[in-house]
Image 1 (cartoon, rainbow, N blue to C red):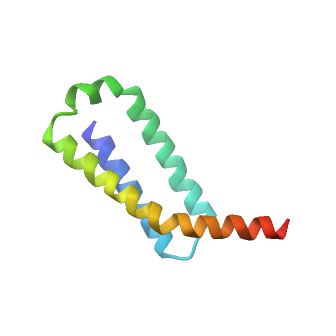
Image 2: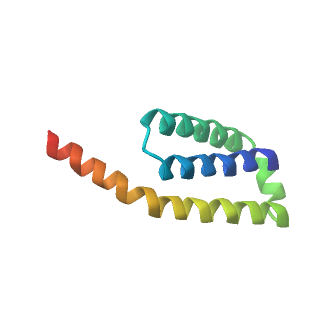
Amino acid sequence: MIQKLEILDETLNSLDNINNKRFSSESFKEVNSQFEKILLELKSNEETLKINKSSQEYINIFNNILNKIDMLEAKILPKANLLDSFSKSKS
């Protein structure tokens, strides 16, 4: 289970790398697909997560993942809103 969480963490790093480079929708779609796969796997192992959620290692990994998600949201959301408003103005 920790391995899946570490993969999720690495996927967040990939998303940050995509954000720091020139935007590529193909790269974004690939990373998004990885997210979906990992989240589905984690969902299927939800009972295991409930059992192990008090482990300090799990808590540290979850906190790290949540911090990265917050950071990425702050970086990417303004760009997404700009792209959305641009696409609406083209219509």
